[in-house]
Image (cartoon, rainbow, N blue to C red; front, side, top):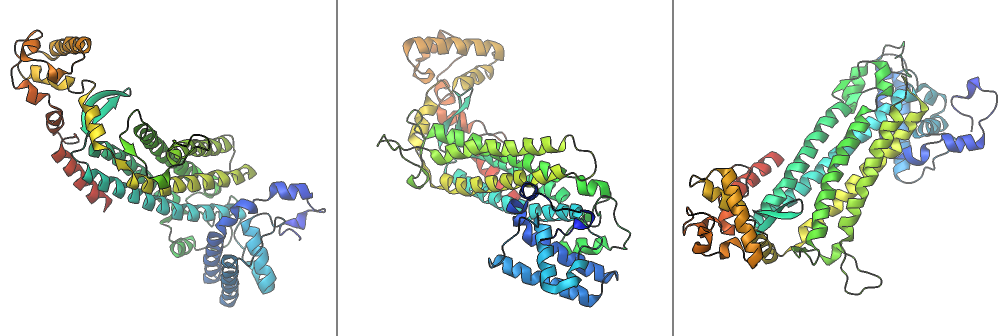
Length: 457
């Protein structure tokens, strides 16, 4: 097959070069966007008088047939045609003859691929946003069931203060909510139309770029032809946002892995989202959560690959930029797969509320509340901190909890302590008292759930 760019060359490319140079094995997924963009380009060429209306109709009809054949599995792409753009154009010429050769007027593969990737990523961002919205919905539903399910909050993986499972889940709602904000913001910069930039310097033809932008649903057109063909910031930005999604999924998975262990015993994962051991018959492994945690590294790698590919490139287009697609595609595929499986794994897990409550009662999670109790009776906080620290040491020596101390024992540390201390340091009261906006008190959590649902809707 003669290359569509072969006029200047006197010999064919080496077969190894064809294979090395070709991107059709991975950029074929852009076929729908390439064809849709070409249809809009053909209509615009007719609109400005570069080709006739009849020629545009023949091109569009031919492209529609190619699209239908690709989706029906009747097209075999050619490595010799290099990429999706040349494959589609070659197929078009074969079907409608010389008229098909007019399609590429006033266009370069440089601005064509920039268009295709932007259209592709725009759709994929919408798909990821939908998956994130579904996950947040599941988190809110789960939180609503566990507004009063007390559990220990941790710092340094040490029991710190009592919270509720709902409060804990809402922390992830905040994370995934920020992810959604970042993706929406990224989409604005993705949704800028580069076609018309040509290879790097625009074209001498009187293009109507705004018409193409409207046809394809873009908000604006690019303002600099050099930047239009060399910009991959939007791909980096998406992959960075996807990396943060994976960070949040990975952190959540780490907690699920810990919580499902015998040492914690806070949850049990559904059998459908667990695996066993080929050797140890008693094992029930949280492999789905572990695999999501592991896959975060893939997306981080995709981000680093894109940054590294771009960092030394002069303007405008360079062949290195062909390397953007596999990293971008992998980031898209990975984050979508992980979100798709994480949501039902979370929705089907069984919460062991009594184990959580028992853990919350241990580890002196009410120590800060005892210090607050003293402060409210006029003891300076730093002094109250010292008093409670000594009380905790006393309890550790005697294998007691703070609420098991007698009033006489409390008086060893401070005479301001009275009988009402037991209510003040009860685990339920420790949670209920933290009613500040954003706190774990049940009413504060219910309000947070209502606000989150409003934002989601």
